[in-house]
Length: 268
Image (cartoon, rainbow, N blue to C red; front, side, top):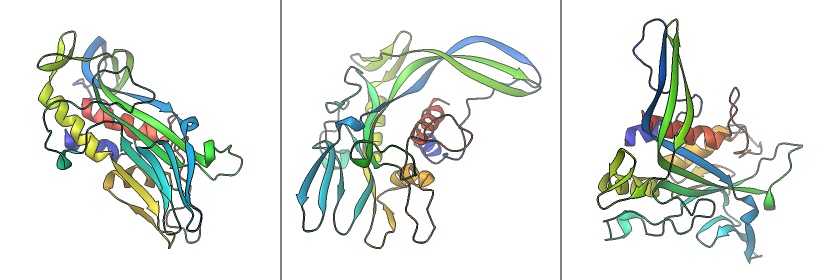
């Protein structure tokens, strides 16, 4: 599962495809269901506030909550910050390893009872001419991954498969030993292990140092920002960090593409 998550994160230049059925020529399958991972996205840029800590070294905090913020100062300028809304500390910082996490800081998805991960990403807005800047010139998004029961339809024509998602049932809830909905259930230990892996994965950041070089604090941070920095590797060029627009040939934002790829890889 960790390998599938990494596959999704590092597939920003392509779309991770659903499983291909065993049909050499032409097939049409009736609608079928599967346990799956579903994604949700919310633009929470209007929640950003600006706090000047020090005018001497241009130390400014842009925050959605005190726990979810982007920092800039005289030496480093934050490019993105990603933070889980789970209330417990990271596993390596706590002896409290049992049980699922509680996502108390959720702004857009407080009613989801058993998320796999829920995180907030804050990033500088695009500097492309003609675009209307977001609140304080920044953007903030909340991203949710959760268990779901996904319905699919698949058609194979001349060996080429096309799969479409139809309706999805959400609302998995905690039981005494598992997270479940209908006939599907996930062992609580497996569920909480996934939660904690994502919590450590998506507490990360990337910033621009005093030499105007991008620095990522983890592979996940690099995966999230690098495909959308159109000036990457161009000397003296101003970087563009824009999650409102996807890569050429897609109708998804860049952030949606990466996280949907992650969800599909996990589902497969």
